[in-house]
Image (cartoon, rainbow, N blue to C red; front, side, top):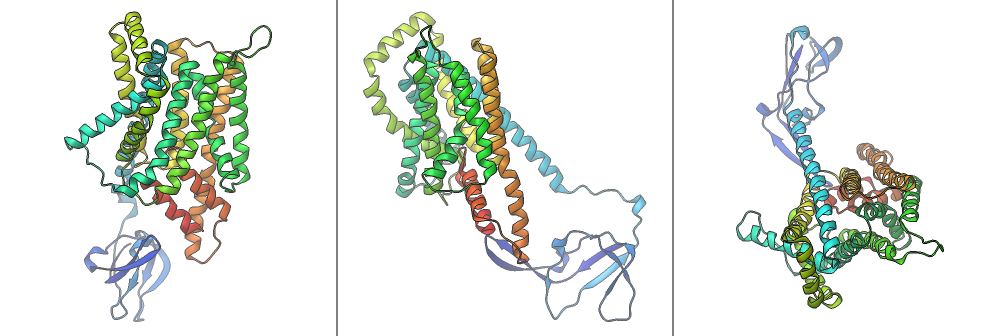
Length: 454
């Protein structure tokens, strides 16, 4: 049977924690629902029986009705065997969204691989990581200023308070960016990214011992393969001579990657504490971050390396490489900004958890491609350490799935007056939300969910 319900109702809509009642027109509420069939009755109110199935819609069609009006229910014959399934519009939109996310991920990974290749080529020919880092930020800032001036992209509406809260984030971002570039100038790209895959371990440890946040035991267990894999890879990469003395040329590369991890952790913490409620898109947020980081980095780059060293190194690189070196510099700078911009834009479409998984897969693509292109010698122990570290990062990113789905159940149970989520799980979810360059719009969304769960 087909059951059509026509009723003047007032439906509740939930916005944040408030409930708003809106009146709907009777013509808008006509849906097919799966309910038992109706038995004719002399009673003034309709009575439901279990004789035949009805084809009805979703639960959302039922709502609070006005007391002075009655429901008008009509039944029509329906032949189930001849019916055709109705494809909901949400299915097509969901498929389109998945395709869009796939394009984001593919573009993000490809741009990151290209950047790392050109970055390493530039650093091999021109070993001045401070200037290279400055050029990357300058190119991205110039691109965004042109986009805003030509109205290709809408300029963000910011105030002094925005830049004030962005400043500590930019300081941490600058340190992390320079440290990673220094690391790549000293060691192989693959080794730098293996060490950088240990960033979740730094994130949890800093949050636990400096901020006093508590996490489930499964989070700490997921750190074991991350730390173990990074340590195994580091031992095989840090070279020793015949007298078992450490080759100090490889130490700056290792320390640079470690400092980069720590700096990016503090960048995420500052973003979490200072950027709540800021309505800036992911693309514009990263553009503002690049501009402020450029202002911070430029005087330090001049002090550490200086124009004289740059001029001498530039002439040497041009004589050895030729005009292609200029193209390498331009490509490295452009692709650095593009891959970061796409990663921030993707956060407007996906959850931080999905972003974390994508970031893990990105590191795999960079490690493999750099080994192939630069013919990096890989020992079996080194490969094993890399695999364990990347696997541990993936496991760390998968831990929140259990608790987020558990939280969603508790949100439903909360309305029924049942159990709520434990505070330490809520703290863990808040930590994961802001991890891995979480955009403000996504972070704000998920923060509401944590507040509801608490």
